Length: 164
Length: 449
Image 1 (cartoon, each protein chain N blue to C red):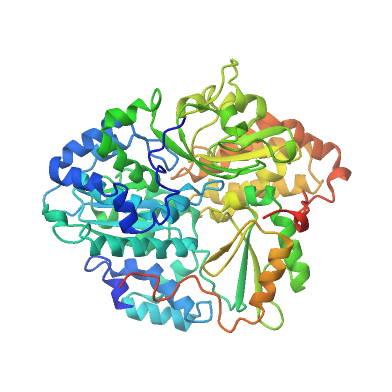
Image 2 (image 1 turned 60 degrees about the vertical axis):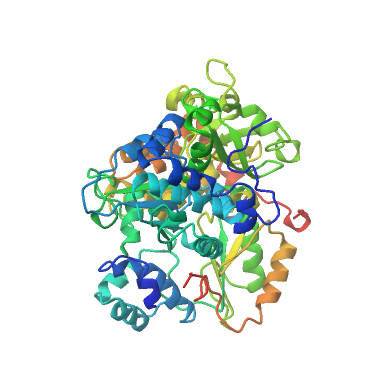
């Protein structure tokens, strides 16, 4: 955590807030509880409200528990033109949940998100840091099968992401 | 044959690594600048090149650099805007993923010109796998003496750090980006003061797009005049275009500015024509924010001149019959696509991404989404179309940052050019009642990968 703070000038340690929240979320089952956010505030020596107001602003921070595998399907323009809605419906049917819901066994959460910058390889979805592109029903089925037995929560980042 | 300045070596095996990149002449712009040029001479070359901001606004880069304040004893910063989030745009991601050292090289050369000893690359949070790639490239650059203290014995010190965003389109706006980099919500600042005077941590700062910074390498290597030789009029050099939608060959293409739009869409060297041999209906030429144009106006101007891929030609006719080059996010729609539904996805996007600071944008984007949803469901009236026009007209120009305009322009242009399609939804609701969230089906089970 301290090495992230050192990337910013002295006294500007609050700049490390976004990277620290990403790391904290990755280590806290994919979501930020109030105690976790309070701990980040302590580390950075800022007020808890400064963490809450930031965590609630940015889409990537989950303020509620999520399934082990968080599926984010892009639904904007180019992905929509190339069949994103069909992908969403297919996953809904396969998992028997609606967008925004988590399966009863806690394995999957399905969300529809705005443009992920993968328009030339649409339709696509993201799980953790991995982009799954040029989707077909077959590809989705294989992916769901593969993720069924995940033992840890999908994550965008870990301690090896950043240079030490 | 189109010249390539950014992607000349992109297909070279191993170009992501320092050794291969260096063997192809990589880092020569840093060498040339540090050893043979003063910082001001680098700025002059960039001015001479006519390079314009590649993030979307198209502001002359050399002029932006010239505005940078240089008070004694105050650090200056270069911040690279890699928060690429404009729907239809994926060129920066492609560049960083496939040739990361080009960005690092451009960052060092540009920072030398600006007198910045520290720079940041603000990458959108969803691109963490790109952050890994950049971090690896930066590590290699340090190991080989191109970053750190006294680079190549020149006396110039420079450090680069990568900073992740966390899923907010608004942070692509430069002052929101700086707020975010300071660990705050991404609410745009009121300008002035401009970042060139008061930017990151209150210090003079230049914020440039990934592609802009990468272009500096060839400008320094070959001179601004050589760069300005490519292109047409005030649209100099090459541009990365992200092509998506109903085309045979989606992808990122480096083009010389001035290429005819028709050639870009139909040539096998680029988009390769419309998917499944269908007819072209409409194009959003520069990312979701720019006005949509029907086929006849994207291929030719209102005067019947061939439309070119350049800042001026795409804007020919103003918003009445023209559009903008923007970020180069080129979204193509075939005859089967619903312009109204596509607009709905844009408007939902802007509603989701509005930071909430200005009422016209916060409330207006929500209203536009609601009205469009009502029309799509088959419950719209003719008055709703006028109301939609009215709402967008009251957002435009009434917000702190350009997100408001960006949300209004697609709505205005869709009504301007495709009003009949909105009316069709109103007049024949029965045809559209099934069309809500899941229309426009593709048979994905048999789609190729």
